[in-house]
Image (cartoon, rainbow, N blue to C red; front, side, top):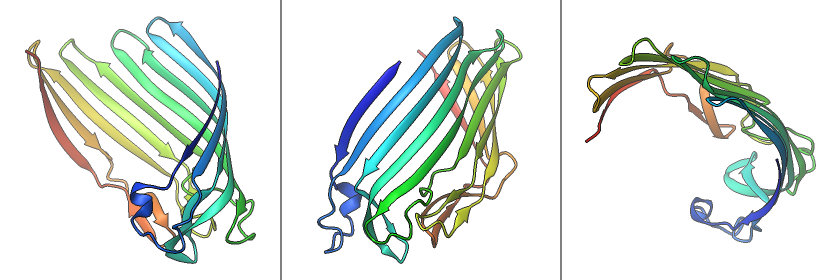
Length: 221
């Protein structure tokens, strides 16, 4: 398949929460995306996909590295990427869902300064991958194990602060008590990994959640 799309996004909502003379006249953000891909049904219950794309953005508002309370425009960003996916059943008891992405994002023009031209985009890891496995030991009992990896990425467009790469494991247990009642236990961040999940600016960085668990019940009637 092939696709081409263009769009724009006016400034609204949380982007106007701190409206002032510096950001009141920010132009709408515009997008242009081109993508080529292929999808393959390896079997009726197992699918693979491959996609390559290029995303061009203009008038992107970013946090000013010199003043985190202000926004400023970057008038050119380009992201090129490749994505691979796999979803379905390996066997009657084993299900998988996973993917890998390689992305390269570059700042083409910063209206605030020319010093950042050519820098990597903020919040964009070069490599990321995930894989979720579910195995049913019996028709009523199953378990799941997942892995998420995110490569290192920069907190802001000045590329001065790096959020390190991390790998996180998640798990789950599934039990069907009856045909109409299912119970599920989920554990996120199984090894209690300490990592940084995201950043608003170089000095406003959000840590990842520690180990957490929850139980859910599903009842059909």
